Structure formats: C-alpha cells, structure tokens
Amino acid sequence: MSPLDLLLKRSPDLLTRIISVACSDRELPGLADDLAALVVRSATGLTFCDVYVLDEEDRALEGSGRPPVPLGEGVVGWVAAHGRPRRHDDLRGATLPVRLPDGGTIAVIDVRSGDPCLRQDLELAEALAALFAPVLCSCRRLRTAREREHSAERFAEQAVQVQEAERARLAGEIHDGLAQRLASLGFHLSAAARMLPRHHEEAHEQIVLARELCELAGAETRAAIGGLRPPVLDDLGLSAALATLAREAGTRQKSLDVAVTVSGELEAPLPGHLQTALYRIAQEAVGNCLRHAAAGCVDIILEHDPDQVVLIVSDDGAGFSIHDVLAPGRRPESYGLRGMAERAELLGGRVTIVSRPGDGTTVRATLPQVIGSRGSP
Image (tube, rainbow, N blue to C red; front, side):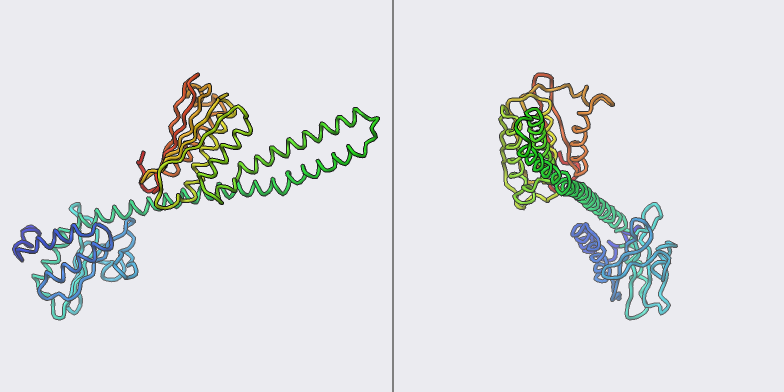
C-alpha cells in the first residue's frame, strides 16, 4: 500500500490537512514544525514529534529551537546516517528516517507517546515522512539558494566598502602629503619672487612660471582627492553627488552643457554601496566624455523604479566603435568601460553601451535594489 493510500484509509479529511500544511509554509524551519504538529494531530497516541532536517553539506541535522545534531551522533544522527528506523529503548517512541525516492535521507522524525507506540501511529508517521520528503528537499534548496544570495549581497557590499576605504585612504595620504607639500612649495616660491631683485627679470619670470605650475598641480591634486572620495556623496546622497559631478564637468570644459534629471521615488534611501557604484559609473562615463567625446551636451538621468535603479549617461559627441575599443589588447580606454561593467555585475546588475562614430555615446547601468534578485534587467 502506498503512503498516500494508507493516509487516505486512515482518515478521509487527512489529505486536506496534508495539503494545507504543504502549502502553508514553504520555508524551513516553519514547514518542519508544521509537519511535526500534523503528525501529532493525526495520530492516535503520539504526544510529541520533532523533525530534524539534514543540512545541505550533509554534516548535521537542524531542529527547531535545538542545537544541530552532527550526522552519526546520538539516535537522531545514527538514523540519518544509516537510513533505518530505530525504536526507543522504552518502546514509547521511535526515530524514523525521511527518505527521498533515490534512497537518500533528507530528514529524521522523532516521535514519542505516553505509552508504547501503536504500530498504526508509526505507520502514519512513516507515510507522512515519505509524502513530505520532496517538499522538505525543495524547502532546503530554497533556503540554501537564499543564503547564497544573501552571501553574494554581503560580499558585494563588502567589496565596494573595501574599494571605497582604499580610495579614502589614498585621498587622505594625498591630502596630508602631496597637497600640503605643494601648498608649502607655492608659499616659498611666492616668497622667493618677492625677495628677488627686480633687475633679475628672467629669474623672476621663471619663478612666476613655477608658481603657476605649482598652483595647477595643486588644483589637479584637489580634483583627484575629490574624485577619490566625494564628500557630497556621504553628506547629501547620490542625486546631489551627480549634480556636483555635472557642475565640475562644466567647469573643466566650459563649452559643455551637463544636465541631471532624477525621476521616481523610493520608499527608502538606496543602500550606500549601490549609491557609490552608480556614482562611480557616472564618474567614469562623464570622464570618458570629457577626455574623448568632444561633446556639446551630456545628459545624466537617474530613474528609480520599485525593484531597480537605472543610470543613463548620454552625450552628443564623436562616438566610437565599441568593437574596436573592447577588442582584446587594443586600447587603454577599454579598462574604464570594462570596469563599469564589472562594478555593475558585482552588484547583480549590468551596463550596456551604445555608440557609433559620429552618433554620440549612451551608457546605461541597471542595478537591482535587492542584490539577491539576480537576473533583473
């Protein structure tokens, strides 16, 4: 007699209860607890039931509210390791394996009663175990998949944090070292220019030129510090940081018109690592435009959707052949493009680049707001 036939014979409404439990909770340990309660409610003399589910590595069994039981340890571990039932010494209970169709053990059911267990109750528990084995297996896989997704999310966040920490460290070293020395050098050059007799015109001109070069180097150093870690991103968020990026780009290239558009609303602010990634992608795209595009205008668009955020940087510049730039070993520009794509992929998103010579360039970055939802566009 099959497990299903035995259960139908036992109680006509038992199938309804089984379906209700199987559909009520598809996550562990909730399903295991519901199964344990179903066994007790459906039996004649059972007063207690525990369900232990074997972990994905087949090393230990996990029960609700109980420490994990190593495989092979104690009665529960022994039954899981050998795949055979075992009666308690006092005959008032038994430990039963939950086996998959291929013969492997997925879980263990431990039942007890006030008196010696009735055979019909043990048969009931075994039938329910056989019926729920595939469901428990599915729940375990779902839990493992979610744990891996959460691990991927934590890894991506930590990777971004490490990158930004290193950028912040470099910014601090440049500010405290090179920037301070350049400022001191400029001070001494100014002092030397004031002290030099006027009849040394050529020497005076050289000092003035050196002073100008020192000021230029200082400005470039300050720009590099701001690029390594823009304070506005921490203080005011992504939208303000993009606006600052646009203003700085317009300052560097007076003929360039840079506009920022933000659409959509979020129920909660974007996580910091997502804001940082989007800013870095925008920074690289705008930097490429300044270096190569000879564009007249750049549009930076940030779109907030319920499950994703989209960043678009589009220019009307010279454009380029994507095939030529991304060909292996061809151009150093490809490092920036590949870096944008890798940064988005780390967070479960993607970057697409559309460009042709003479038609401008559009960089589109799409990141899911929940990294675990990989496969989002």
